[in-house]
Image 1 (tube, rainbow, N blue to C red):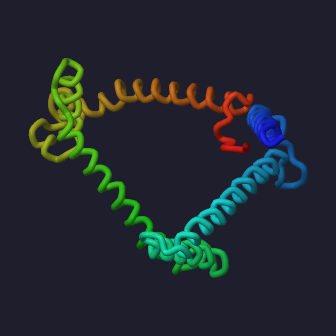
Image 2 (image 1 turned 90 degrees about the horizontal axis):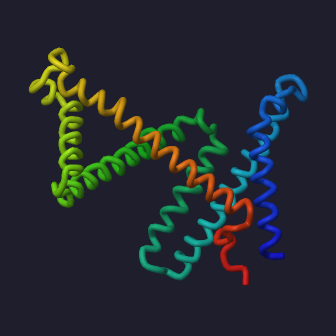
Image 3 (image 1 turned 90 degrees about the vertical axis):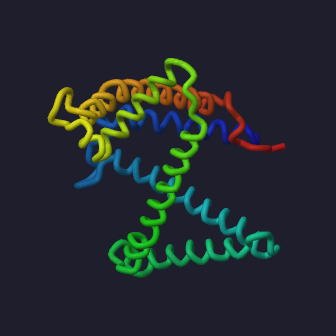
Length: 219
């Protein structure tokens, strides 16, 4: 029963959610003024998301609490994580939430700049790795290098100076826009369709009980 019950629940919840999405127009009638059946169903899903977040909070507290208690390496970072996590949660829950100036200031002045910094570092890391690893060995790599160079020039002011957007073919900017609007969009849609089909197959395997690794070790 340790395996059968989670598999049955997973199948039922997947089927229910699929039916709710497919039958939204039929379920979108009002129960009473301003409240529809579908909104109630969506609220129950949101409630489950919140419960999952709460369980994650408890698990994170247990893991880092054990790290602090056993004085493992870098345990001071676990202390800092718990202080920030619970401090920010308390500030948002009991001191005005989104209307609280300290709450919004911490987000705008600390979290957003840190997030931008991390992505900026990642961009430079990817660029430097591509420069070190890229080798022109065949026709495909030559095409890739030329397109990357044209797109780069189309995004910087130097490209506008070399070949103005008001001249033939719209300059580097015009060619860059064409690359992004036609070949890039087509390839991204193809990749997106492939990702969707792969995700759908994975969800179907989980829903039908063919994929059991998410259950972990229940022996």
